[in-house]
Length: 189
Image 1 (cartoon, rainbow, N blue to C red):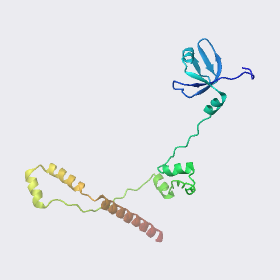
Image 2 (tube, rainbow, N blue to C red):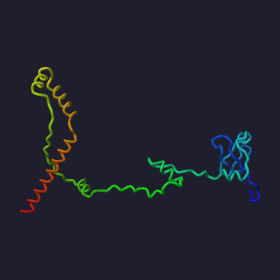
Image 3 (cartoon, rainbow, N blue to C red):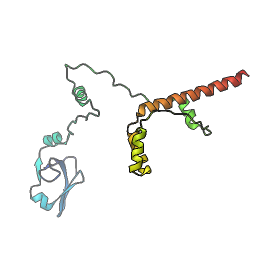
Image 4 (cartoon, rainbow, N blue to C red):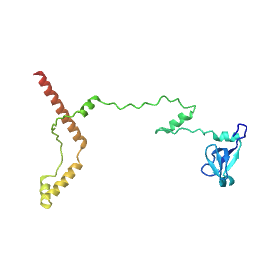
């Protein structure tokens, strides 16, 4: 196409391309081709799938429509206000930075240790079981294994897990402190 030629502009009126603008390039017996690489078959061309438009309308339609970014967090309303720049709103400061996960060097050493000692700790907690008379009555009426299983279920369903964890933590602390004391005695000798 020579520079002196007048370009022809078209807009799609139907199909999924509706509203898309095109610049005429060439045509054959089968189709009309556009600079975008798209084409319209002769049937589409003759059925009015496209409408010729002026250059000004082409320029206006070919500009991308501005889009607002989508807020990315749960405080979406505040983000929209910030993006829209409402004059009455206070200017937001920098968003809080997410702190990187701190790696405790003690934990790294403990996790990488290959040789570990096994130490038993005594853990004591209180449970409630039926009185001797009730146990004897149950023993006469049912199988002992069945009584034992039901009693275990009953007791474990009523355990106070927090108190057991606290007891375990106390015993672990005591064991660790004893280990320090033993090492201190060896150094003093």
